[in-house]
Amino acid sequence: MDERYRKALIHLDLGREETGERLLRELVDGDAEPLLDFVARVTLGDLLVATGRRAEARRTLTDALTRPLPEGDADLVRHERRIARELLADLDGRTAARDTPVTPWSGSDRGPE
Image: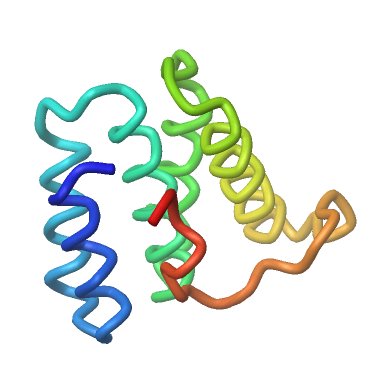
């Protein structure tokens, strides 16, 4: 995974949400390749949910899911799509649509090590 994305996750893991968010926004607003853009959008949406910005989270997650599927790691794409759908279901109050509960932001389950 891209070094910029790894840095964003490190900042988020250390509780530096503003810096982590800024780095994620740079990825989604920049010229990141489609797989990285997709993962960064889902991660940003997750952070927005965790910080109570529900409307922006819904837009970000919906945007991630409505873009053409990125080429690349099928398992990672499937994992991130599941996270995005679970977060949207939670935002919409459709918790029954989830197989597993959504846990608070940790960043530790993001992408390959």
